[in-house]
Length: 484
Ligand SMILES: [Zn+2]
Ligand SMILES: [Zn+2]
Image 1 (tube, protein in one colour):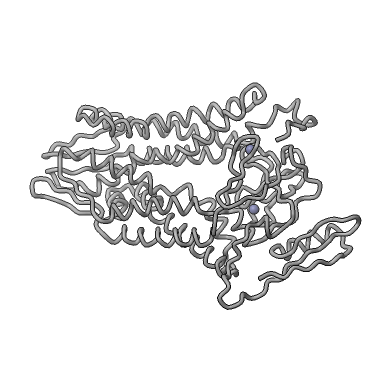
Image 2: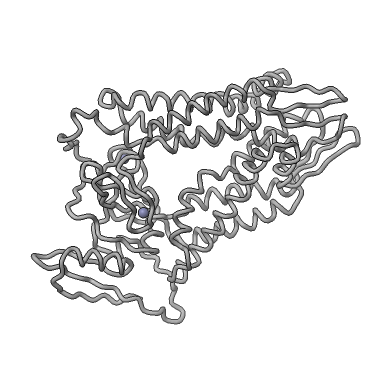
């Protein structure tokens, strides 16, 4: 499928770099004496019956040293050759740099298409039904969001529909579009923009959290009314699992290499020290190491992502978001999150009130889920991020690996706090039997959803590379570090 040829040409490094960025996909160079050895790869149309997708991993297709800078500790290293099923992680902090999959395009494509079918089934069939004393109600999945809008909670409704249906659907269509192009060996239009967007999108998809919310809702009203789960619920469970597998199936190293090749590593880049100390930065989206301008800024030459030596004003922005989140956590707990009307009597309940009610009902495990998701996770996250910001200045005295692990944990658990918001969305839509039994959302729902979003943003603006920066007096000249 490929024809390799070798020419010996005398070209300046500058023109070579320009050539490299122009023909990223097919050209590789090596340096011998005063001349570059230019190896070029011609793409020929596939023979009939020959598989069109190039399944060979990047390390087979280029002999070039592929540098990566760890996103979490900024350590510069060369990617080792990877076999399917293998991962490359950072020797300093353990962050995973690349995961190699067997047949990555087919795998992602199959999973994304199956997930899309499951999502279509989940939105077309009834999600759940409830009945009490002959009165009942049946809802579809999207009604969990539209009912909130009807109760003058448009922001919470939009947050619900975005995180469980809209963003996952956009993500899946994006994956299918990308992999379709890669399978034909001809990336479809806007493939790079889509690949960049997917990298930002996946943390806002919360189908798995929604399932926990649905199960908690079921237990909450189990004693008071009959609730039955519909076909849509089971389709949604399958969708959530397939969505998770799709996000894990993306071999972004292979994908970016197939989309745009691997431009030449910046001149003079040396592994075994930080990228920032050499005026370089690793792209958080495609992984490519780029040279920055003297101000420590730049753009990735492969995907166009904006790059910074360190996220600008990272600590200030994280503090601002943390303080706002902490302030929002006060109304989230003082005001009722929902009001239950039973036999004409309304009883508002706060987050903690809901937990106490569940304990009184004897539902210890459900009470524990709500308590962990609504109290321990957000408070723990606020405290952990505040502590990480506070001790950044005393970096040398504390264990950086432990702090990086703590940061990873705060980033991972953040979205699970949405459970209580989803519980409100489901119960408000489902439990509607007038004065006999109905549930309305309270003002705390919006405040609490804001806490979840703000703490997630705070974790994203915090730059974990700061954890590894030694304090200023030692920083500037002694950057030798230990070898990985
Ligand atoms: Zn690292
Ligand atoms: Zn990039």
